[in-house]
Length: 235
Length: 295
Image (cartoon, rainbow over all chains, first blue to last red; front, top):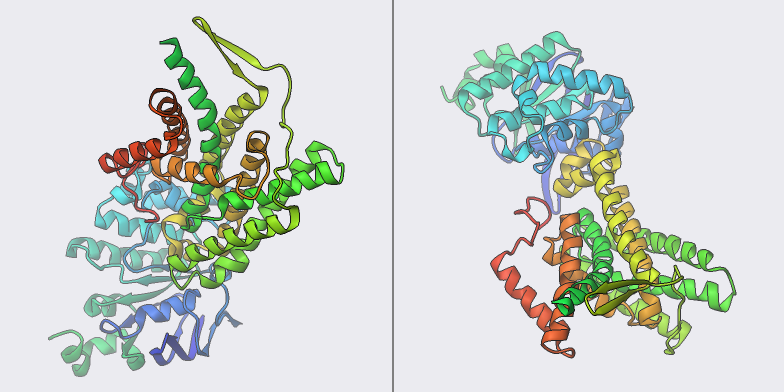
């Protein structure tokens, strides 16, 4: 579905991505792991068009989208839920959801999706008139995912959805991702620091180290690998 | 007492023009995050264009107004796309300095093209003025004065509803609060900035046309109004539209009262000093809340 070939990205003079190639299969959960500064977020931002690539190629459903404007990428069905939630704090919960549906014109379907979101996250329904900035951390994360879902993604990219959340709440988020995989046709690209959780819910994983892919494989197999256990799972 | 009431009404008359100037300034700031120092001069330039259409080319008044408003919109869009966009990634002060440069260019250009003589400009609405009797005294409100007050209220209401109810309004608010997130939702942030610059500058042109009968048209006609508009905006918290209008009206009243009861020459200076003190007590402005938007 999504394919990245030899992607190189610079931040000023700093080479953030040295050479990244990866694939996301249709209907899968693919995870991108690694420590801080490995280039996980940069990879997502480059796919979304927030950061431009120096060289390399990104294709989505056989269409090239390297350095295409971010608004077009959203329309193609790639939606990113950014790290640290990045909600619109002075908009209400409902308005944040509407902002998520910005590129859509199918008013009826948007309303249906809002109701679907409220079923998925009853707490957001209760707080629909509240300003997003007043929600708790967990609720904000749910709203961030919900806002991304409102854009009707084919590929949903999540950047550290469990960051700063209590273990119980991050578990809810991971369960939600599994539910989305089972009940919808959404493909998920997940960036996580919690390698254990990510390997457990994903089908395939890539491990990044300083701008390169250090390791890749089926998540089940990576979980068993001694190298992974020692280096990334801290066991 | 009746003198006091009279001054309040005269203050409102002055203040509504401050509020109108402030609305455009705040619109651009709220959206693109920049205080446009050239704002008043952009309006001045459009007023000259209207003057040229009417007095030089002999066109009808309405045509002059339309051309000034359209020119304002276009000048705003071009300024954003041509001047602001290339330096947006550098720093906020880079954009600020560019607006200062634009101010000087517009002033110089106006002087070159139209010379330094004051040009008179007609009122947009004419007719028998309104008389308001308060006790023994009587206040005269021209139709133009009432028009300014009503238009300011309508524009504020219009902008307010536009932000609340339309998709583009929502996108502008979203962009102001988190530019990257707005991009991730598919908002064309560049278009949003250009739009705000266009509408904001058209408002400046409108304010200049309304002020022109009183100030007459000259290169510095909007200088005081720019300062007063800026002050009104600050007073209102610089993001809230109703706050901005309230700030403009308050500034008008304060100036009027200072002018009558303290000193006519010092009215602007003292009014600004009072506002300085007000802001020390309530830095977020009268209706402003602590902002999570542009800082």
